[in-house]
Image 1 (tube, rainbow, N blue to C red):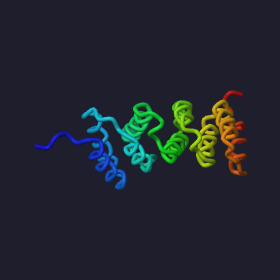
Image 2: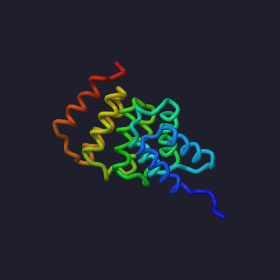
Image 3: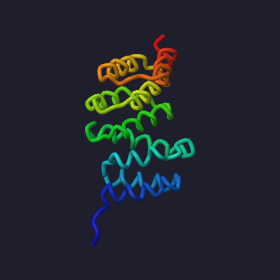
Image 4: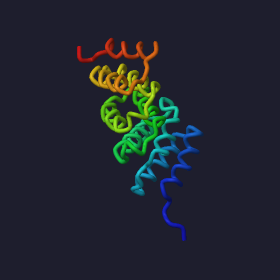
Length: 168
């Protein structure tokens, strides 16, 4: 007799569904994970970050977003790679989901010495879309403390944070 599937098995199923961009199959796997009360992990979220989000139906988009948000809440930041956190910032600004940005940045700060210019560029882009000047300034100060050098792209992104300020 075979026992219940673990998250690794569901991640393989999910990976196949995401590669096929199959909205119904993605929903089925995510609902199974939820019904089995299994916590999604970084692999689950990384797989979902590859989905062509706008092409999915509304229910699938909600499930994907809920799952990615749950991963952020379930796991401590030290288990996240720089690439994964950068992908999360990209996901949030591309999908105009800004309420988790500050929480995600605070989690990332615990590992800040590992982050590079690409990470900060993603943070500035997300802050720009969100109109979140406060977080942009905090990230700039952290970037300066770590000695991460800015280039023309970073300066442009930082200026855009101030230009899109929603607190005006």
